[in-house]
Image 1 (cartoon, rainbow, N blue to C red):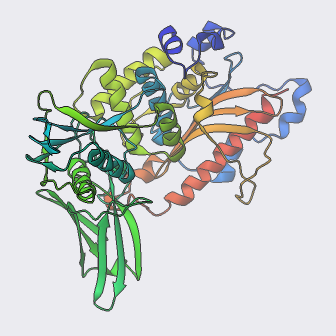
Image 2 (tube, rainbow, N blue to C red; image 1 turned 180 degrees about the vertical axis):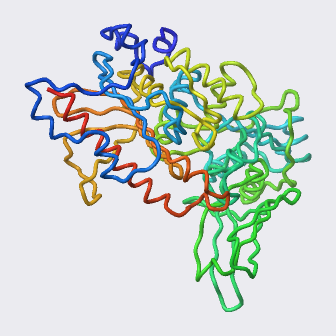
Image 3 (cartoon, one colour; image 1 turned 180 degrees about the horizontal axis):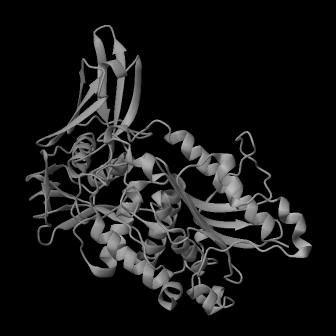
Length: 498
């Protein structure tokens, strides 16, 4: 662990773990642990046991968890702790650690506008290039700023073409092919991502039918796009269809599902063309007319960078990723971390495999089996023991500070601002899958690292691809799983404190 802790500010120093007995950190419990009450602890017998917690919540499927004290490394209670379970977005906590170790907390991603052939009297003599550098936070405002910088730099026209380079990261049509086509949390992945690779679809009913628009809106701009097209069709289902038509994302929507008006973000499947399309519009507003964007697979030799834009530092990017659980951010920073460590990879599975190996070496995990960096893929597996072990390993190194506070609730499900137990954790939710991992501080100051994974695989297996956005019963199941998570935290706060 010396490399991980000494090299990166985010992870602090190895001294934070100097008090933990090596055997406690290295060895998993040989059996599921159960609390043993001493005579002076008889008042704790009123604390519900795990089976009662599961029964009260009517939670079906498997429940796995592991919890340990951070000051001693002592494992307190475990159940099904070595069972491989889909971690959902809990996996993003591991991705954050992986990216920080490989790239460092101050790493910034750069998007550039470059030119071949030089610039003479304000005219680019060759091609103008929009070059993606893996920035997951690039938005329309940023592209508009680049276009304004280009004009300020004296560029007025371009003799050659307009080329877009997105291959700094592998280009993939979507994160998980098993998701419905229209869900915005499953966009394309590439080295150039605009607005999290989502396009804004808006509709409004008028006297002559529906007026629809597809744009790349921000708080400052609303440029319409040409590469994504929507057509309203007379049907009731399916609500959306998608088809790739040359250089366009072709969508249709069912007239019967639209109502009077509304909007939603749809995924972009051609991210380079999307960014190029929007940049062309924004450049035109600055008086710079560009030809149709053309995707290139490799960079020409020696282009001159004219203007560039750097992202925020990696640490706040990851804090936002953990807070809002942004899948595309996780995939892009995860692949960037892999390429910084071992060089180019072909796809998400290859990058996730590299992260799995890193987690074994650096976090002490024994069998992580991630297929991506976001946890969206259904084939990913992780045990509660491995996840809790990772939380224990990096405690004191800064992860807790960028995890989102977990809102404890009262019996009616209302948020409690004054709950005596403080929890900072990463949640994870898929249909009939719920995870939570992080840290809790009990009333006496005892800090525990934990992971809780619940999954009803039988119900999940029944879901068709078309139903995955909201299958029957999934929402109520996930609410029950969260009740179990809070009840377990309250149980540990009562049992394992003085």
